[in-house]
Amino acid sequence: MLDSQAVAGGESPAELLFRAAAMVPAERYALAAIAVVSVFLYRFLELHVVGDVLRGFRGGRVELTFHPASEIYHRVASKCRSLHGRYLATPWLASPHLQTLFLGISGRPPSFTYKRQLYTVRDGGTIALDWLLASDLEDADGFISKDDSTPLVVVVPGLTSDSAAAYVKHLVYSIASKGWNVVVSNHRGLGGVSITSDCFYNGGWTEDVREVIKYLHHRYPKTPLFCIGTSIGANIVVKYLGEEGENTPVAGAASICSPWDLLIGDRFISRKLVQRIYDKALAIGLKGYAKLHQPVLARLANWEGIKKSRSIREFDHHATCVVASYETVDTYYRRCSSASFVGNVSVPLLCINALDDPLCTREAIPWDECRANKNIVLATTPNGGHLAFFQGLTAGRLWWVGAASEFLFALHESSYMHWQKANDHVLHSSLESSIDKSPYVNIMEDGMVAPVTKDGPSNNDGSPSDHEVDGVQLSNGAGDRQQLEVSGDKHNEHVSEAGNESPAGSANRQGDDIYSNKLHEIIAPVKRSINQLTRHQGRSIWLLAYIAFVTSWPLLGSLAFITFRKKFRNPLRAK
Image 1 (cartoon, helix red, strand yellow):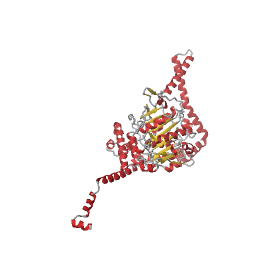
Image 2 (cartoon, one colour):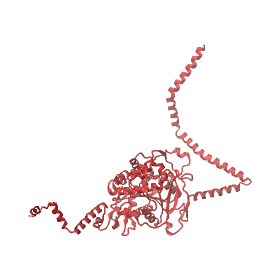
Image 3 (spheres, helix red, strand yellow):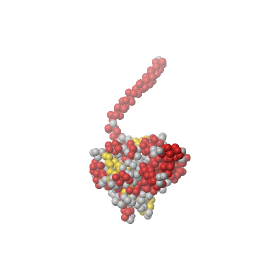
């Protein structure tokens, strides 16, 4: 009947459909549009409000991965309530993207003031060390003595981040308020410090962390050292621990939101639309960092390519690979990924990652390697974003800050802290130790092979400089000045006992004695080493002499035969 009327009226089915749609109220269309947009945003922003409601706002369980026989888990991590509970994100930040965005925009960090110390590394570069002592929060004159045993935490920030980042301030304030001292080791060129050498930091540059930790250990030998790395800083810390193995003064460490495998991360961040947005945002940050140091980078790298970079990979191609002498970007990512160094970590290490991290994918987490290492405990949460993990209705706390500090405090109270062997950090000044022990080498990122020395930072190379911030002086040369004063007192006593000698004669005599003593100190190890080689390797020397004689005999025999034949021929011709 309806079809016959439509045909009679000359209306097509499309026109009839349009007329029927026009009869639907506009409010229904608005509701449908809102529903479609809501579903799209829910999936695009990866919201988990519905999941939180279905779980009764209890949050997701923290999953732990560890070796079944790990003493670090059974004796340390098992005592941490944060690692055996649940994590519930702030309800109005129930999305990894919302959490990460809020952390970058605000983060609600605590308010305090650092004390800055500028440290000069061996190649002439400058690192800003920003300190917050436990006594600073009590309005006291903060000072760390050489014999202080208060634990010290070294914080390594993420990519293009420094001590002013919200998550760093949350971490620093939380640890300092519990009685420990904290120092943030900013990357080169960050924290308002200029580039003073031709070397830049990158995702696998561990030399700065190694030198800072060595300096702090030698300056405060009785202070337990802990280290926390965040984001790319976590990759650097884990790589450093894997490179050093047992030979590190770090007592314990924590890795927060590490990318683990830079090559997988590069593929991940360019896969989806939302990840590509992060990629462009980080590239803008890197170009801003490069612009601050344009005079140096324009000379060392491809500045035109840096200005046109729209992704992290393009920036690494034009800047990182050129400055650090990597063949390709993939070569840089493979060599600097910390996942390859997890198996050699010998320090108690807590690793925290969120499975919904929009920057560091779960695909790069080395699950099996962490499970095989008895020193590592891996904690993963279903939610958290990148370095966010906001808690509470006001988003005033970061869950990972409490979890990492709780682990380090439990480790400090246990007997499972890592202790560097005494012979690992003794300054070698004699030739005897170099001869008696096998040589060790490091393959640097640029392909060069360099010997590994265990010399601490000296006054002439890699010595930190003294600076005064906020009226409090962080002196790096107090010990040296004290030693000079003591030496001066001994010199005065020696002069007073000299009796009738003139001051000039006494000074010359003492100078000759010092010169002879130093000469003796240099020659004595060589003599001892030669004696040892003679005693223990006498047979080897004779064997080498025999082999040399046998192998060179055909040549020597031929020369002797020719010489004697000429001598015998001459007398016969004369006769």
